[in-house]
Length: 288
Image (tube, rainbow, N blue to C red; front, side, top):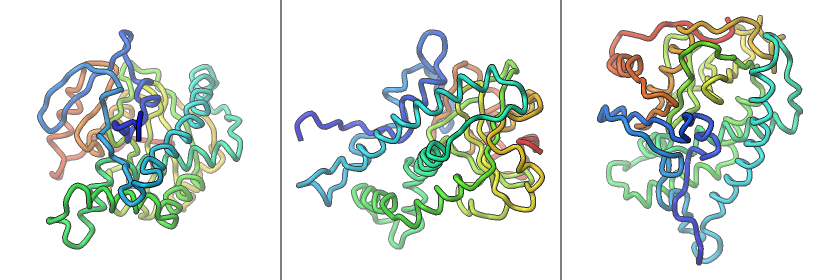
């Protein structure tokens, strides 16, 4: 197809632009090679023909990418409004989030978790004969999963039915993000998860900007007491240690790259060395 966009972003550019520094760039830390570089969102969290649907090559092989683009435009506007309200709002203030907007954002967050390179890897590893799969076969398997209404619907329902609470960061430490930014944490705050995420009480930590984080808590017994805080700004100030603790989720979840508006990754490096050991980041996070 003429003019066909070949570079498909699995983390939207509008989202990454919210983490730019004053010069219009962001800092990327390659966790696997411990290398830091400065760049722009255009070249990050993207691969050529990542969602190209070979089965529909004669019709519209870019249908999935087009659908992602449509929902991204809607969610960019919705969350931009949130990012205007939250920094200026009072602690504990309710946010006027409509049901249609809640549904759109739930869909976006659920798909964001499923659409990344890391999700492709997990889906491939769970399939028979994964060691011998070609990259094309892995892509087909991944895109078929993204068209699976039951699988995608479970994620969207998990987000949509959750208690949404928004934390405002007024510390000197910014929230960071990654190439796999939707993080899942156990209710005791002690572990981050990439698989088995529907365990009882597992909640979402999703940074919206360096100043704002979104928590999505399931309506389980562990969090019954915070249900009145749904769609509100967290009623307490967030301490620096909580921001750093939430940032460890991006280090754990990342396929490879962690992004920040600042060239400061020492705490992230320290946490990365604990992954796979019995040492953990400070277990403080969220509304409780």
